[in-house]
Length: 104
Image 1 (cartoon, rainbow, N blue to C red):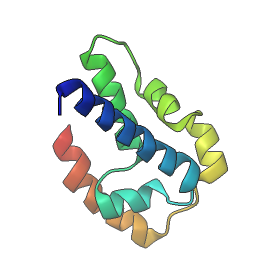
Image 2: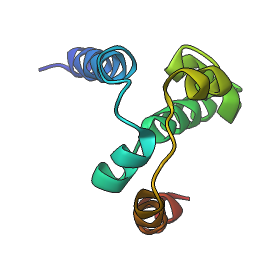
Image 3: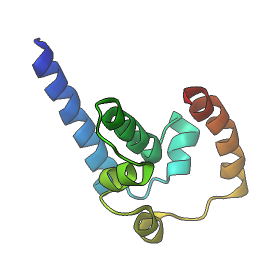
Image 4: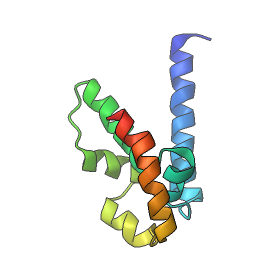
């Protein structure tokens, strides 16, 4: 497989993952994703923003999130985010330290 085809396939897989999370599984909360997988929609939007910045494209965290989510964070939260239990919040603290802080 040539490099350009590999890049195109990876991009297609990313687009499909984004579509799945944003259209098919809006019921899955970011905190659940973080607790189980060590990443969430916010991580994906941050990675997108970082990739843009690495290529000289200025993009803020909020701009990256709006591109990934297809709406502002306040709209996403109002439409899809639910309150997390104390147990989920405690699990998140562990997951955040293990996954996010080591990446920064």
